[in-house]
Image (cartoon, rainbow over all chains, first blue to last red; front, side, top):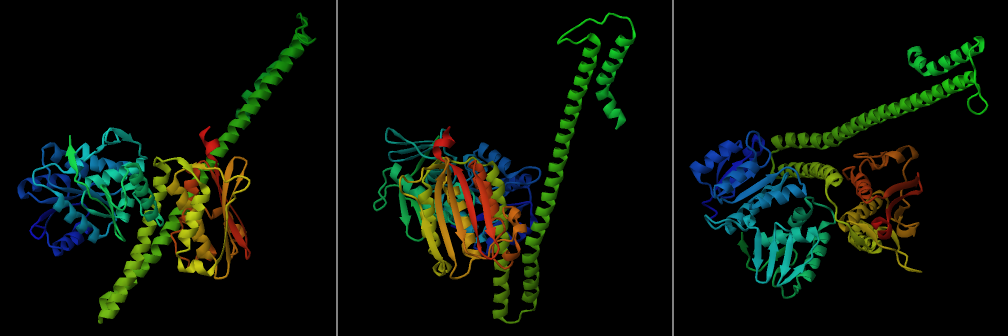
Length: 238
Length: 303
């Protein structure tokens, strides 16, 4: 699928599109480029891309607005947001508004390709992604994104905000290997020298709270030396 | 000047004129309060109002001057910050320009590889710089997650983390966390941030000392504060540089050639400030330095 996939790359900064487009093409994608939000919306209509890489800060129509309009129309084309600011609020908003994933600038282009590949693999044509669902359910584990609450069976699980964000990200990206660095970025928006330990501590906290056995996990699986993976089957509900 | 002081002196002058007028004329001059005649009373009251007005004016002047001073100071800080930023970016950019020029002329694959590697390194430097600047800005606004944190554990974990660095094997380490008569009280902190602050201090100690030097990590409790200290027998910091070490992008003489963004201590300061704490540094050139973080204990912080 990926060799045929068509990507729409939207960024007003030409230096970025000029370098990124050939890189994506060499990675096996067909790439079309838009310089602003309006042009992007027109190209979505005429070209029907398989996925959109969308910069947030743009003149005229910004990336957030493009995302909002497409989702309002019921267009569920996978969208990867390129965020400028690493603020936690901004990132949470990106996911809540139905972006499939996001990357903070500056990013490694290889990381972008990895994200695109994951997003395309996850996408089911015409269906809303998990990232657009308010409730995420995996057997007896329920996560309410609006109320920021988690239930295990009938009992509410009290999680710290960081542990919640971590679980939210893992559950919206099930069956996907997520590196510690990526999780660090999700929870903190930073890379940080001792961060991978912080991630491990939070994962241990999550497992304890979810009564998940690390050696025989139902939810969070450790991939030694690489990261973590949410191994349960997640269902999204309104 | 005269125009400013005239209204202030007016009550005193008026009181003086009234008291003279009463004494000179045959108007009734009844006893008022505290065995004062009306004339004396008018004089004293005038003087009193003038003194109050004068004090008010002086205070106002002082506040204004302070305000102007702080404006000048922040303008100076901004200028200093920009020139440091300029300097921090200039070096990697120059290196990249040189590497690009080499890349254009490179005929062998090996030379090309060398240039690309060098560009990548410099990019990494700039990326770290931008990342740290963002962290610093982010730290001022982001919500922090406070929970009771065992300081001893943070120190212990930091200690074992730094032991993984090969250079750490060439230092003498002392770790002292009090257990008797009671263990250190917890502090109300964001665990990850506190960890980062302590890490930055230890990392600095490691970077600036030489093989054979001693690095001491210690923590103690003092009047409802937990104090964490990182001391070393390194080169120390000249007295003139001491006040500036916590500043954004400040790099002292001895920091030339030591890798880093110049934001490590600024981050420490920002983190500790968010915890209502204080940072201090003591140092003697040639003997070493002690950096300390002071954070209120969880008991106090909750109140």
